[in-house]
Image (tube, rainbow, N blue to C red; front, side, top):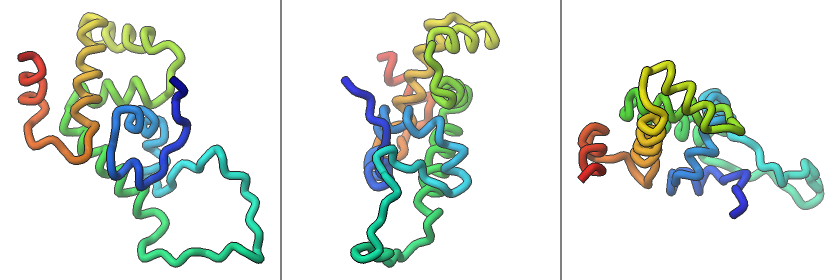
Amino acid sequence: MKKKDWYSPGAVEARYSKPQIKWLMPHLSLLRSGVYPRSTRETGYTDPAISKAPIKAAASFEVSARIAAELDIRIQAAGVDGLMMEFLYAFEPDDEIFVTEHIAQCLNLGRQDVFHRIQNALGYVSGNSRKITSYKQYTRNLRR
């Protein structure tokens, strides 16, 4: 399966799927500043004879800031597990096992425990809308 390298803002706001969350984490600081990551498929070429600037009802930074704010709220609701998830996916590490092991050593936890907590946070943060239940209740329901 090929990893998708770009998601449109509309697709992200409609879904917030797990792959989208993983893709957004390294770009979170860019989103907070109001800039949405550019598509790698864009060439930069525009034909002045046929291209006209579309009229938008919102400022260019609004969508990016809205996505960043939503992610920040969801990550904050997941607490320490959300921060571990943000740390793991923020830097696009080649070796997730090494980073997970480092987090486990820093927090004096087992690597498998850290991995499960990050997966729980990813599940809690993803989805069309915010979870109604608290993160603590969400993890309790997963154990059953």
